[in-house]
Length: 217
Image (cartoon, rainbow, N blue to C red; front, top):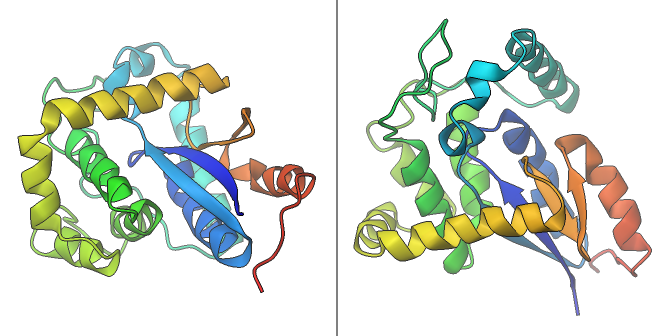
């Protein structure tokens, strides 16, 4: 029986994007099931965060994520458009958010179809790899969803019809993350132990090996 791992993940988190290829490889290489639990971006859940954060943090984040992408050999650029509508230089979060809630609902519905990790992988790539301007326009999302094995139109229709239920599930994901001992993404939780950050995947593998993690034959 495979080991199980929960992954809390956000479409606005560059660190989530940078972690995703290694999570895909982890599930491919080892006998482990990755259970994806999408959460809303911190900026949507707590808009005041960016008004209070140290002004040195945003430029450091950009520098850090860019060098990580270089180290990993991943294409990377800040999304166009940003999944969270935010004013600059004030960093104020807009009241209307057309992208992040939709993406998170789509991710949750893909999870319910057993295609959570492929959906995150394909969609985060078109958002973050710097090759797509206007990832929200045309057929970009539909094609990414198809590569992940789901139909975008079906997911969108269900997200409208079942919005209250899906939003409640997403809120529960966030509650589960905090109950596990963290609040940020990406956070991997194994046997109740949280591992926060894309730089904790090797440590996570080490811990799972103590529980008998085996390579797939």
